[in-house]
Amino acid sequence: MEISAGKLRDCEVRVGSHIPPTYKSLSEFLIKFKDTYHINNLHGTKRILAAASSHHRLLWIHPFLDGNGRIARLFTDTFMNYVVKGYGLWTISRGFARNRDRYMENMAYADSGRQGNFDGRGCLSQKGLNAFCIFFLKICLDQIEFMGSLFEFEGFTDRLKGYIALRHEKMLSDKSALKKESFYLLKEAFLCGKFNRGEAERLTGLPKRTARNVLKNLIDEDLLQSHTPKGPVHLNIPSHAASFLFPGLFPDYFSKK
Image (cartoon, rainbow, N blue to C red; front, side, top):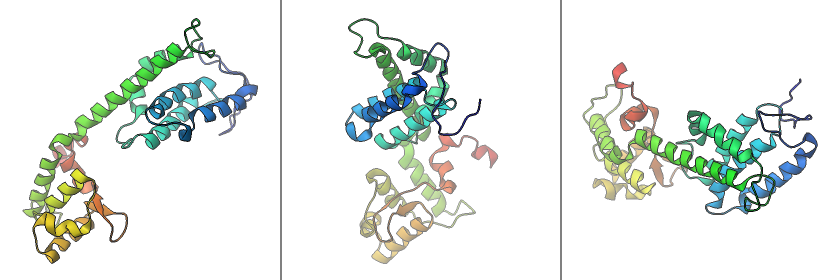
């Protein structure tokens, strides 16, 4: 059987016990899918619920002969990246992979037909879809908690201060010294998201020219970044500092030193 990338299937298929819609009806189903889950038609928490339900519905339609699982995960990651700030630091796809049996069970339940007059209005079970959405949200929370434990944000400012202290004392042989007041600029960027360059003098307590040099050094080191040459700056984590600031993400770093 020849498979062409991006081409809708042109034959009937069966996936386990699931029989997807006929190939002749795919266009109609996909138009309905687009209208139902178009991001501009959704607001607030409905967007998160739509991310969950659309994941199942796309796989239920099974538009391609092969690769439907990968396409659905890519679609859901893209959808989530649009509606959830910070998505990418964690992903639902990782959670699905680590909970495959429960994922398949909930997918199968959502595939089931309507169970009586009080189970939705379509041909599929609303109870089944609700259960999958709850599973989806629990996986989201699990992944957020897992990645949060690795980032250890509660102690981040202490690690930031410790890193600057190492740089100030020239204890990292491959890196130049940084003034200890650099910490105040990085802390401000971390806690506030960004700050104006003109704030450097106030934040560091240093003379204006010295404060500007401290700011410039941090930008040159890629510890601070800006979208424009004179715009506000925000925190950045370059590879040379990541292991110090997020040791939970690099557990083997110091053992290799």
